[in-house]
Length: 232
View (cartoon, helix red, strand yellow):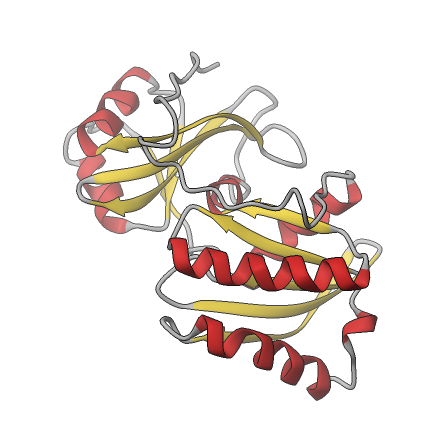
């Protein structure tokens, strides 16, 4: 299966072509996208990437795309392009939250272990997603926008739960206030990592139609805060 993946959620972005065969994956290429010009770059870069590997859009079997949280404009550009391609080609889409992809990096879990994936949201806030990571695919428990101090309170009350983030400043803030907090810094997800979880979701039938594909913003104005459940 050939999957085209895209991430336009951040300051910079990327697209990737990955071929999956049984239990193996081979990334044909990952192409960086310069921030601020996603709308002008994305479709031409996809066309160039396919042509470079002697492929056309009809050779793509499925799509994986980062759904957020992140830049409103960037996400709309990326999701819009994938929506259009998937609708034309009638191919499935795996929608992957960046927080979900961060939680997927957990490598020392038991069947009941939960992880909190967090990303710097600026203004002394973090995007936070709590996941059960005992299975093949992280299972969402709750997500929210937290103040830094609320994140510290969460760490104090969930001492057997690992906090995972690509942002060193967030982890250092927690570390300086909760000396025994379990913390792990991971790489920020990009198109080449989004597709790994996307592949798992496609195999599990967890895909969405172009009409169902939407961005995840996680802002206080969108909904009331989610109260996290007790950890195992």
